[in-house]
Amino acid sequence: APLTTTAAAASLDVPEEAAAGSDLLVNWTGPDNENDYVTVVPAGTMEGTFGEGAYTSDGNPLTVSLPGETGEYEVRYALRGSYVTVAVTGLTVR
Image 1 (spheres, helix red, strand yellow):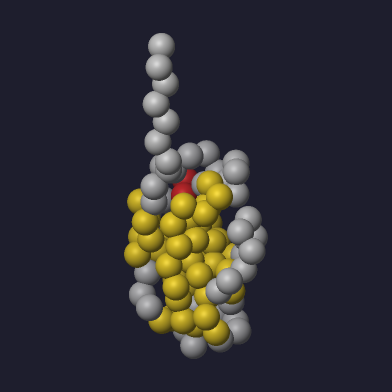
Image 2 (tube, rainbow, N blue to C red):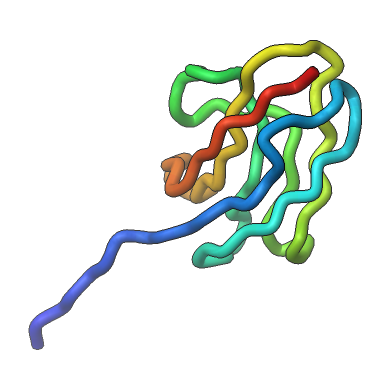
C-alpha cells in the first residue's frame, strides 16, 4: 500500500524582547513527539545545539529560563530524536 509522509510543522509565540535571566513563557504548536524540546540558543548557533529549555510534554505554555547575558537569541522547537529544528523565532535578551 502507498505510504504518504508529511513534514513536521510547529510554531512558537514569544515576545520580541525579554530580560536577561528571566523566565520566558513560550506558547507553541507542534507534533509533541516524545522528547520534543523548546530551547533558547544564541542566534546563528549550529543546528542540533541545545541550551536552556523544556520538553513539550511539560505543557503549553512552557516556561524557559533565559541566559544571563544580553544579545540576540533564537527560540527553537526541535524534534528530539533527529535534533531537527522545525520552528524558530528571534528573541532579543536585554
